[in-house]
Length: 480
Ligand code: 87F
Image (cartoon, rainbow, N blue to C red; front, side, top):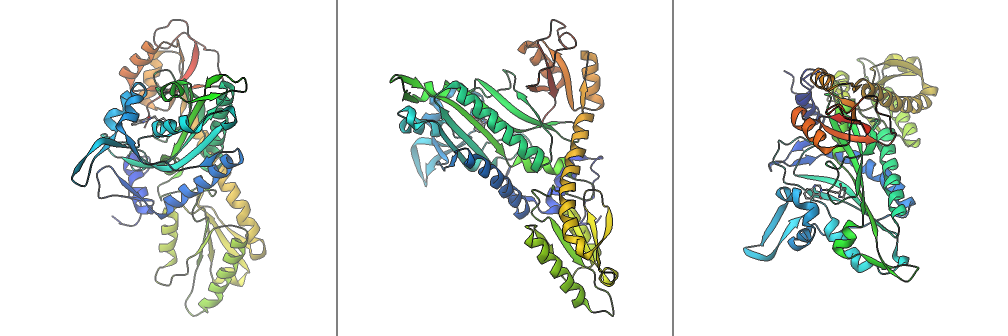
């Protein structure tokens, strides 16, 4: 067994493959604390890319970044106990400062609604203070007891949480739809992962929300992964935290609120969806390295001629804003380097050997298809730019086909269960809208309603469970 390359096949043991790819590609490592992980350089660079894209979007629409304390006094969470009750077992507490017990214990933030909204009550006085649109990039702690899964289930993770307050319900609604569409853009056009977008059912929504919208993707093992959420909080929190404002009508009103988030689990989704038996396959738009250049020296010739040609091409690519690594290390063979950069998922590799030099060309290899082509040197920069765009599109197209293949419409509960054991994925079925059926299906199959799509489809049959009149067509799946 080689300790460098990936030893597990993606379609043989998906879970093992996933962990091995992450560890060996150097995206992350286990930490010496149970349930925690270390986000390494390349994964952090991807997270920074996501931050850059989202920050730009939300800044343009008047959101500002802030930082609130990570400690939340117990009283704040208690004030909101109705909405957080189910989450209590996952909260981590600070009880001592040194050896001295604290007068009031402090939660390590599992989410920041309570501390932020207690502050909103102070900041918001008049309609002129609205809308208030803030966002925070931070770490979150949830004391999970289920098995750790790198990026998907760890006790600490990174996220952004957006929190807004508005004068009207319509504005809040517009906000959650705006966020949803920007999230979708990031997932589909940057991460190259197609998503289903829609509403959560009553039992799956955030208890503090009027309704929860979500973006859901399907993983190669047929399990769904929630990629992000955007909640319409209505006036639920405004009532608890007394977030009132004097309106233009000079009367007192409660604000309308939203909250929304995406987390570092998105990186796990990228690994799962695009990776292959040789390792990561990264979409060019979020790849920390987009192009690697490997000079191929040969005995009896001038290695400097090749190296300087490689350097020249690297500089030209960099001038176009492309991230390039020139791997001219002498201590590794070209073959070793190829494997290493394939493991790390670099979208494009350029090889420059003696033959290339002589013929004034370079060899360009793409990570997604392993296709290799010779390109005239003067066309190389342009060709690489085009190729990066093409790879980005190809990854999305492939993922979309996979989403389609993994979505099955069923007419009966018998078929529902059959599809679930045979292939998993999204199961599209008619539902009566009753949470009792939803619960029975969950208990019997382990699936939940992932989304009720915005683009409503007339139910083709009666409810897949109770056979009463169906209200809507929804997507069920087992999930991470
Ligand atoms: C775990 C422990 C304590 C989820 C928790 O989705 C509290 C919670 O409130 C908790 N797990 N939630 C819901 C989070 C809601 C909301 N917060 C802002 C988001 C997006 C960002």
